[in-house]
Image (cartoon, rainbow, N blue to C red; front, side, top):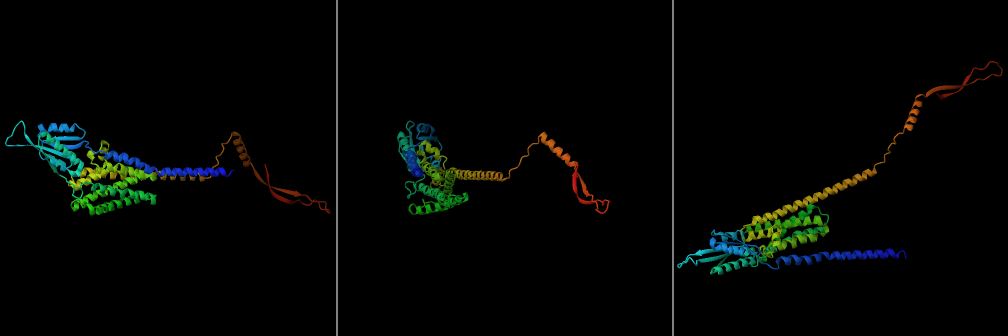
Length: 421
């Protein structure tokens, strides 16, 4: 009877531990089942213009009313100018997503009341097919309002082998995998790997992954018709991006340990990809995702890709700085966290060693304060020792000879040291 109770308790503990492990095993899948629909679907389910930047060029008396009508809506952020040539250059330099140029045209039957205009719509398919479509629709509406037809000019057309404009996003996605997966694998095979080993693995991935992904994908999609220098610039930014992703994974692992997989996937996949502008252009994202796009590292990389390949590098500096800021910041924070943990561990060791050394020391007898009586007794004993005299004493025996009547001279029988006072 006494043996049954511990066995039953042990069995219950085993079942509880098993159920806990099973529940933990479902945490990661459940997290992604919930997070992917909420974040990805929430970001790209309804791509509509949201403060899409638009420039209207033409005489102020004509374009001011058109601009005000566009700018009052939430769909467009419209500005206007009367500087000729500004429409095309602004789109080419990525200052705006599109532009509409309204120019008066002189005719033989020129009339002051009904002037004739030409409407030219400047779009950039490389900004996203849906963005170009939205700008094209506005240009058509303006032309209808003025009673003329619209001419369209695409200043940054997509490559013929990339008609959907998705290849650059594929480059971003697939190279991201190499950066964070190498850290996840290191967590399993070398959980105690030093920080320099982690960064070395990330550095190798940052060099190898862009070359492999671009090289293999170019078999199918080509090289965008770009020059060798342009491709080198693209791969350089991609290398910086992969290293940044790896640095983010290293930092997350420092904080979350074994649960870092959830943090890495959430930080790099769930927030990074929808806000990058790849699945849906930033101008068509909800306000929340646009705000993330304006500072996140994935957007810095992807918009740099676009600028380098399709806009001759125009606007790339702003996005490269955004990406580089993340790179430097992540490495600095990781080093600070690592050093702080190291200092804390050393202090703990010093404290433990100090405690052990203190416990090993022999106990010290603390003298008892002397009382007046004890002091007087000690003083009396000391005075007695001062008056001690050492004297030599002898014992004599007087013997009488039987034949003689004179006593025999005394003879010392013993002699020794004695103490008298």
